[in-house]
Length: 342
Image 1 (cartoon, rainbow, N blue to C red):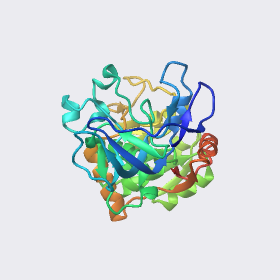
Image 2 (image 1 turned 60 degrees about the vertical axis):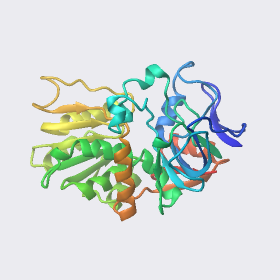
Image 3 (image 1 turned 135 degrees about the vertical axis):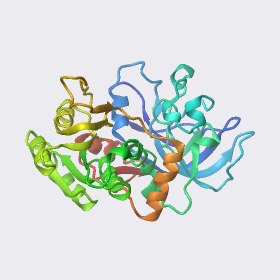
């Protein structure tokens, strides 16, 4: 089969021919119908040698049709259209028992890694899923339109649901970075909260996208942003700031624009850190770094999409075009999310 692999440190992804995998006991093989690209892939490819086993098939956003069942695998049938829940855990600890495999405390010690972030990923013609519990029915959703919801939808949804108590009617939410995750976050905020949504981005086209998907205001993400947010909130600041960039400049905007007793959710992996303390963040403010989401939250995200409340802006590519799509992702010229159709 053909696959997109990161083969050596510092190299670009390549389209290669590799053997088609066979499912082992309890495993499921999918014929991939769509796979999403993410900045997390870029982060993985920036790490030093030894961080991940190479070569590695990329792609942690995946949907497909069940193609083959390993011995003992039950709960799905050949031909089922499914989405992959990618935050794999041990399956037996307290976190996994409640569906929060994204916070499994044993995964690292057991060598369990998500597809495309250690285990072979979805940027291939076929994908092995380790356990049927990591499959969610896709139903009538279009695979190309829905695949990015497994991360670009689930990750902001998890961050927002965790902050729902701070987002009643009359509150303000700031979304920093209107990329693959940020533009979905705006829609989720409009769908399930009463907050006024202010979006920030350095790119005017992405500010335009923010307004198109429901932001009440879209501002330039620069030194003027804090004053603008303070003015729009009557000097109070935002009850929650969602930083989908996570770089030092955006974290500083978050620190200065969050309200007292507010929340900062650092979702982006831009390399920045934020000092939280008595003389740094406003009184009562909390800082959190959420990771991915739970299995039940993925079901909820798919239901939001099915109802028409949220969607992902998609640029579609073939498997052969995947390396070029990664270059565009690095340049920041993708509108929404890049999706590869094998």
